[in-house]
Length: 249
Image (cartoon, rainbow, N blue to C red; front, side):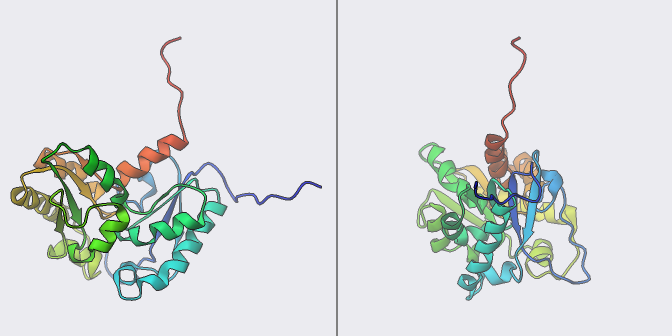
């Protein structure tokens, strides 16, 4: 007899995204279009999986390694459901990149930092990669190494948003409502200040999964190429769902 094969509960959604548990509080923090957590961001269907008990503080804290088993199990479940690539809603999930890759048989892109080595490599000599991150102090040399980036190199410059009161209150301390215009002003300001400090920057990479909605504003202010989670996921998703070209016949 032919062996019975497991069937996914539904099909046609190739992008699998691991999500933090959302905080229960009185504040208004929507996942807006452009955010990794908003399904309208993607040109192909996505499926989401919440990781029980996992949040930002846990994965950057002293017990971050204890979360690995939960992350791996959630990724494996997404693959069982039919996901053809695995990503997440936090750039600091890069710390689990290798563990998830070892556990599943589909491409794993847990962080936009995965783009870092490619961007750094294609930049001209004398140009640097600028990274805008939610918390610079947490983007440690160990995490840069996991991402494949040089830790102590003039080719990489980092700006954090932890001292931006509206951004930090919205996504780091979870202590205030979301204010689009105020957050955009802070993110653009951080990018402009980074470029003023390091005029040799040739490309910007946005680490946080909540930053893509502001990428266009950052580009208008800096006149630089800007990459983020959406750049990464869409590139690989289009490889999974190729469309035929037309117009010759």
